[in-house]
Image (tube, rainbow, N blue to C red):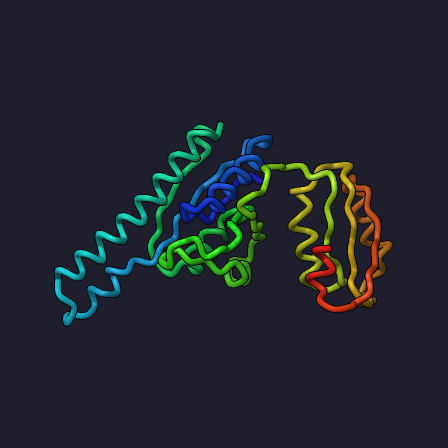
Length: 226
């Protein structure tokens, strides 16, 4: 993980995502770039001549204030991180999801806060859309996450399909060698590849892997969480 982008919007969740990214980058000498993607309200308003200049000025001032507050939140958090010149900040205007997706394509990983409704609408992110458009792995961090770049136990949702294979491959650099990895399948496994082959693949990467199956009773998501 040499290039990590953080979707930063100034919220507590974004600060937690920044701390998590710093923990990932630190041991390997990686670089972290916090990207503040924001929709500029005044740019849309300026296209309508029917909007008074005073209104456009107010919209611009509001936008500058919101972006300024997010920049201040980054500066305060950056002061607590030991990354030096390996930590950078970018404020990029445009459609938020598109900006983050494009920026993530030139990185190893995009780290984003879990959406809570706390962020201003000008910085509203949709992680599902960003993941689909970026082509890069996306790690979503809750606000109460504790920075830990080497989890001892990991559960991987596994159904044998393409998306699961992609998630597994993208997750390998985040796992600590020798850690316990559980391939959890909810319901019947798609017989595209035997589980033993995947377990052997993980063991060659130095992981203690096992297969676990649970019945498909109710929500698959709730089963994974439980």
